[in-house]
Length: 346
Image (tube, rainbow, N blue to C red):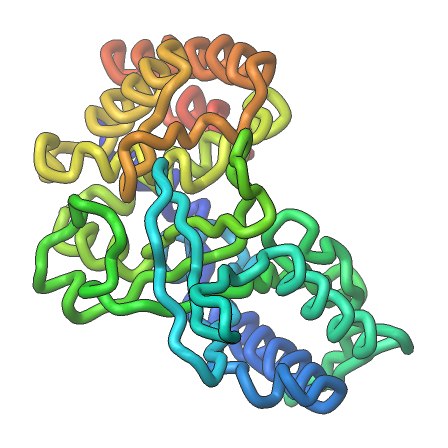
């Protein structure tokens, strides 16, 4: 059996059936709808400004591995006044609005998160449980409380758990893109929105009012029709997950960014083994340079989320994995050898 077939078999091992995925997804929707309804019940302002949930992350890109037990959701907020994005740099922006006689005023990220945190705490002041239509009873807890970016809900039923990262977001059209260069074609930016999410800009003169751009729908659209691209991303995520402790804070978005920069230059019709080695090699190069440009704003380094020691550890272990991948690819290693790299039992 060729190594290309080995990697295809690995993909199958990392996946779950559509039926099992559907059960998790249905329960997740019931839980997130319950939480939103409770937030509306306890907070009048939230009830007025909540504008829906928008899926993000691996589930939106359809590259989620194993069980769909982690959901990234943008919690869209629409206030009754115009909000304008104003660029700073490195993917960061201010959000400005005409609120008083002193115009414009900036949306205060800390005040926004404090308000949402208080609403969540009102909901979770008492123990929260939900019985789903599949007759499972989940206990809900509020964990990460928006001090970074997300408000995290953990739902547990026995050994089954589902987590939700709810990130407050302001939605904008492509025509409102604040930077000189739009990174995607017009047919994408004109038909899909982008978001501003609360994010601190290090060393900013106004750190409490900064937001960051993100555009998961843009990224999803430009990845379509690229043959093996998504399968390579799934394999990279599987390899990362198998060695997560040795690759600290190496996020799925970092892996995705490596591929986004090579959408047009790579031949995505090649076999999985060849592409995986090539893309993992690019990851190692970025770690060695300690720089990975943000796809939406190239003056921002995505690796800024890691400290220098974490980058060093990731470089050492990613390089070791690259050598093993190269051996498996060039020497025609057995399936057992390839499966070991992904910690998959035979």
